[in-house]
Structure formats: C-alpha cells, structure tokens
Image (cartoon, rainbow, N blue to C red; front, top):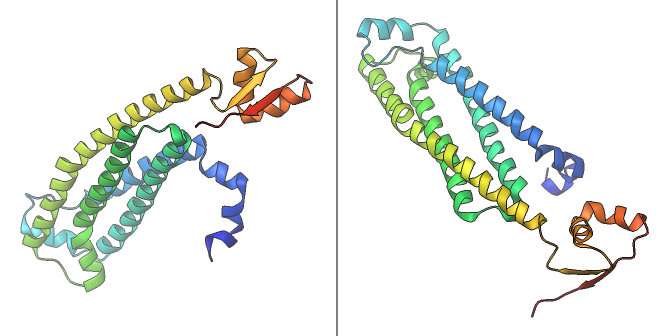
Amino acid sequence: MPPASDPLLRSPRWRVRLASVEAAAIAGIVCAAGWSIGLRGLLSAPSVDATDEKITRYYSDPDAGFNALVLLQAIVVATIAFLWFIGVVRSRLGDVEPRLFGTVFLGGGILMAGVLLAGSAALAAPSVLVEAGGKTPDPGAASMSRALAVTLLSVFAPRMATLVMFSTAAHLCRGSRRVRQRHDRPSDHLRVSGLDRASQRRLADPPTAPRIRRLGVPVVMERIWSP
C-alpha cells in the first residue's frame, strides 16, 4: 500500500504520537531489553578457549539453532527501536538541530547498530548452521566465528557506544540552547504594534496566537520581507 493512502500515516494524531517523548522512552526501553536478552543468550555458547568436545556437545543440541534465531529476532527489533529513538530525538529538535553534533549522533548510531548486528550474526552463525544445514559445525570454524564476534562486540561496539553517548549529550545541550535563544527574542518575521515584549514572544508561538486574539487585544502584524 502506498504511504499516501495509509490512514495511519495520514493521521496527524499518530504522527505526533510516534514522534513524542513517550515514543522515544518506549523505544529506549525496548532497545535495552532486546539487546540485553539477545546478547546474553547468544553469549552462552562455548567461549573461544573451549575444548572441541564441549563445542561439539553444545552444537549437537537440536534446539541450539532455533534458540539462536529467536534471539536474533529480538536483537533486530531492539536495533529498530534504537534507530527510532534517534529519529525521534532529531525530529524533536527540528530546524534548530546543530549540524555538527547531529551528523556525529546519526553516524555513530548507525555504526553502532551495524557493528552490533554483525557481532550478533557472528555469534549465531554456528547455531544457524545447525538449524539450516542440519549438521554440527567444525569446532575450529565455531571458535573462529566466536573470535570475530568478540572482536566486534568487545573492541568496536564499546567505542561506538561511547561516541553515541557523548554526541547525544552534546546534541541535546546545543539544541536546547538554540531553542531557548529562539524563544527569548521576538520573531524576526513579525512586527507587532500595541504589545509589550512578553506579548510579542507569546504571539510568536503559534499555539498562543489564537488565545491572544480571543482576549480582544489589538494586534497589528505586518510581514517583513528581507531584501
């Protein structure tokens, strides 16, 4: 179905709800829960220094492949929620978003999601072979796959998480400062006569303009076009 004909996407109420602060909070909770459960389950596989007998015994279990696929689905859903959180934060700032921190925030989030998905896939690869191919993986190949996952999740993922954490803080601090600066001065595109400075600031906010008119305050606005 094309997006234009979808009543959910055409509903202003749902657009506001999906971009609300509550939506970002729910997305963060889903992300944290999904990543924690998924990675904890996948990391229960034999470690890099496990013996060949232990690796063979673990992957001989017919449920190992199915469990790994379920955990991968949880990680994918959590990653989508993480990207949704990034989208909500950027949409809340709107045109006051600082480009430098916004670019670092978005790029770091995408890199973190990619690294985590790649590490999870490397962890689950031997178990998926059991489910899809119906055979036990070679112990040496399973250890190599585990070593690749450890490299991605222990070296790259924490650095990307640190980048996302600091860029989120700087992004929100800089954006909120710009929002306060915008609200502290009257609109540059409106000249209002007959009102004090506080009333001009309230009038510059569109939701309050109808209330000012209902109070019967004489308001004269003139559009000023910049040369």
